[in-house]
Figure 1: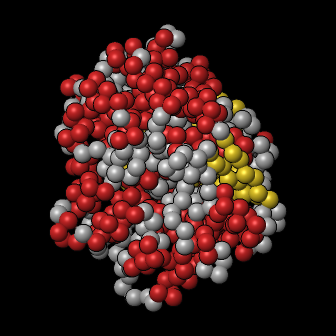
Figure 2: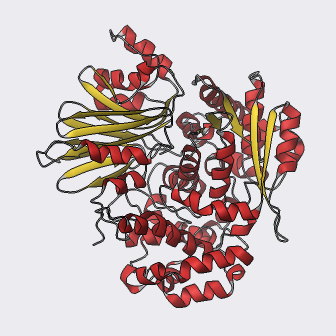
Figure 3: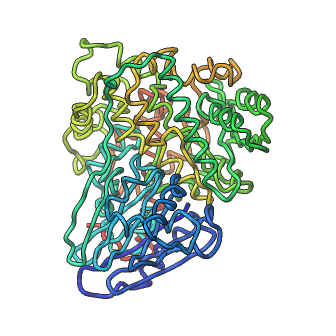
Length: 601
């Protein structure tokens, strides 16, 4: 919905408006419909608006009322109900959107207001001496922070914090280990840069002008069977009803047209079916495809077209040649809040560019695989049983891009750490209130891993074009319900059994029973030709050699045989190295060369 930024001074100085203005300028693409600023002594807020709910000036931000000031990014899907309740408690509203509902909810319930919000959100609120920040339960909306003895700053992107200056830009070795082990998932609070942290999903943070800080986790996920068992039919109807409601809310809570990103896979196709089931007129769908490789097709148009034809949608099919992909890659990397290696990052970027010419809001299918066990490794890890050894070892064998031993030969001595990724995941899997291994695994994905892979990827690439992506499968009520499902209703039918059951009778059979799909980008998996030359140029550049992140013998091995070195989930290890290095060249090196006062110590 927007881009937010702000600063709180700890040193008794007034916040300098120019600092927040620099941050806000980098967020223009997230919010092309307006800009606003507010300052009061040590605190300053900036906001870039993407107008979706209450398009009038009454909902412009920063919003100030009742002695409070607020900047907010996201959408609150239950805001009409909350607004009605707050009016009943005596609150008088001057706007019709969800922003003021957050402000009034805080005035009524204080920090506990977040527990009443159903939606995706990151916001900061100034309460006469206290700065209060919150992030939604699943981390759908980002919130990055930077802190020194003199100030605390927050923003929707790392680029905004870098633009403000005085940020330590050296590499965080712990984050580097996560980056290369978990296909660029770097869980909070870390980012690849030591000077930038991120607020953990499902948490709040409070600070006063002296720097005293309090953090609180307000949501956690239990993955246990309910006390009263349900039949398969009862479970199926319950999931169907919850998903139907999630889709409906994400359609109705908008004063603009809503489309669907249609890959042709089960998840996005089911969203189309549920929208059609609700009688949505003139349903808009969008698909993207790339050039084929001998080893892999570059599009799934046969499936997306079948769904579009079945439901009579107004379908937009976008084909991108490889030359265009290569030309636009650096541009997409500039819009990554953090370096992300997934092949479909550029797919979402180029797709979002075209979609944004038609609509401002889309629904997308991210989250279904993590919540309903849709990946091949879910079944593989589960069937290993006790012979599979410690739970975290199953993740290593089927999910980790590199084992710790390989990281040791990848990273230069300066960046060596212990097996921090293994330790983190072992602790996550061991948390209480999960009945079986699959429950522990899916909970870890939903509450830790998903935030920094598909969710962050979609937010960065869609918001780069002023396009808001809504993800019904990550409605927290649906996630909580799905966490209680018996394993067989997830793992059955090759994964996502309950969703496939719901889909029968709604979707064409070829879509339900097909192999798992996504937005394929073969040129970033099978690296050859001009794509290989492109990556070699990045990794042989003086900047890369001087940075000294990688051991050269490891780089040379991957450059010599790029297609022989794929991860366990079939990603290019060479692309992983090139992507991080290019992100650093374009976001850090360019910043320092421009004379910005970032810190590199």
